View 1 (cartoon, helix red, strand yellow):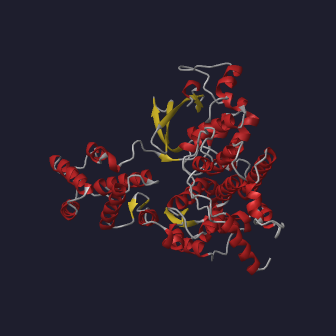
View 2 (cartoon, rainbow, N blue to C red; view 1 turned 45 degrees about the horizontal axis):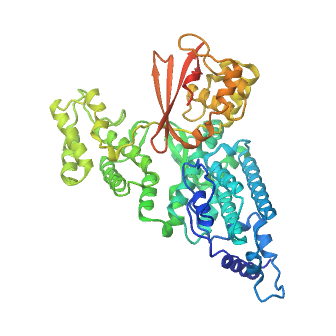
View 3 (cartoon, rainbow, N blue to C red; view 1 turned 180 degrees about the vertical axis):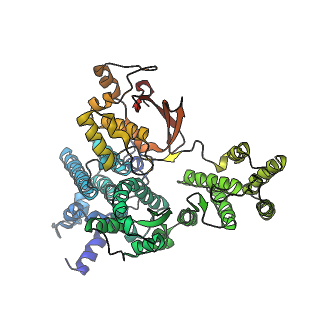
Length: 553
């Protein structure tokens, strides 16, 4: 098809699609196209807004485009062919055909994503779950007022599938080609990158370890990685580097000879600068400059630290309903704690633990120059406590910092960012080995990223339940000693089969660890995006953590 004909057909498609409302979730689509609809329990942590007039994306799969472009030019009627078709009643066969088309399209995209990530569990990612929920809602629909309703709803669901069940570079390209995009779409693209970081961390730590012996200057090597000028290494290593960059990551010096990677916020800002709200621009700028310490040492000046505190406070207070507000609050807490108490390798005290004079002067100047801000009030309160302790920075005073930060500026509870499902390739290997040998030694690790042994056990337990591998799940429950509450296997299967760990994984963003009785008891506090928490308890059995069954969320 030549460009002229393609553009003409695209215009025709757009005209037939003008009626589609711009909506922000599956539920809203349903409410727009039919006022009375069976209730559908939404399980998405984030709603998926998108621009309905973006037609080009629907042609990627070829299905919808092929159907619409085959409309006859003339039917011999006074009404245009499209209008005649749209006025026809919607039959059960029409709905069944559309449902089969959507289901088949979703499954093909899942297969493609599984191939791209070399995985078999991509449906466990929260962003794929969004598309799966949209497909389920579409399959529940049993009647339509017109062919137009059916077609528009089908197209909306296909668009959700295109965006959500795809690699980040595909979603980025589709967003780039849209005339209008929402802040939520950009945040969801970033969220996808964050969720996939663990997948790439698993591979990166393995491959870079092999290459690191040849790296003499980490700073220069990072620049070469980001510019694409690294020539050494295996083909597999080079392909991994290019794949990570293509999907939207950038490499950074992590200190002590280590290199990690993060989301390339510069690329997002530069690409979408004219389409973003002012608050999202500010958010991206904050994220871009989020790294302020390496190896427990400040890598920016204290003056820059002060600037970032004021900037963060401004956006948190001005936009309290911002989608990623909790992430900004966590960063604000970290910055304020660092500013007030220093770090291990950027200490603000003398050898006698007395706060240095220049630090005290800096506190006083910050209070004076920013006296209308909450940040200055926090610093003022801390300085007053310092004076009472004769400017000695004690552990008790350090622990008071969090209590000085008002609720509107801090995230409570707080914890370590995590994924629960799916498992990394490394964890899958551990799971398969444990299933084969039933030997706890496979949990000795170490594991990629920030995964502790107890977190790995908890995640493998959840994975076994979600996939119906109840034998492994039963093996992982605590069965000996104080606190054991052991069901027989049939009772366990009957009770655990109704536990929805997939929905928990969709909603959880952080975990807080609590270790009691010298580590014999381990409590995980799983923190959802809205701040709600659920807990899971583990106990050591023969030196390895096992799940206390009655503690299951």
